[in-house]
Length: 178
Image (cartoon, rainbow, N blue to C red; front, side, top):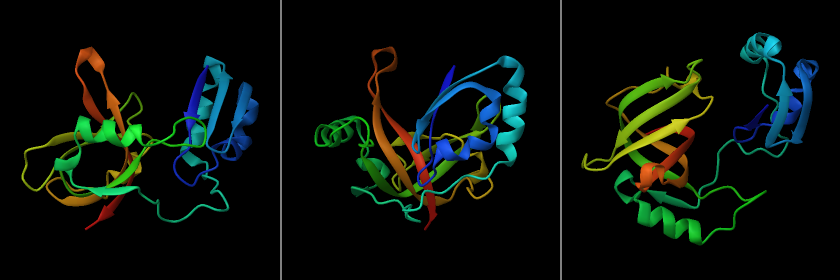
């Protein structure tokens, strides 16, 4: 049993149709899917996903639009909480999206059991705010991201309360060279 969310501009449900027979159940829509898969088909699915082409949504813009432009120093739990209060949530309402300008990549790491997720440790120009940005299914960007260089990062903002400690959680949408 599992689920997935589509990258911006991708129709995930249509993308998975060529491998539908691997699932015992598959449902969803363009932006998210859920399904049941036998363990014996997991390797076949992994192999197929490495070669399958993402189906773009017809109305997908090439560039994501953002509600705000911030620097890494601006991205604090208080700011994220204020932005979250101003937005509706649920189906059709993504978390607040911002363009985080001049984020210096201090470390770039591929993570996950299959190393398909990109973890970036970034700071702003002052070096005082350290943030972690996770790019799910974005390992392909690792070749473009150089440690020690600054980028503009499109991110979704959220909060994490793991272990009772409130922190900013950033999901990578795109990397723009500055």
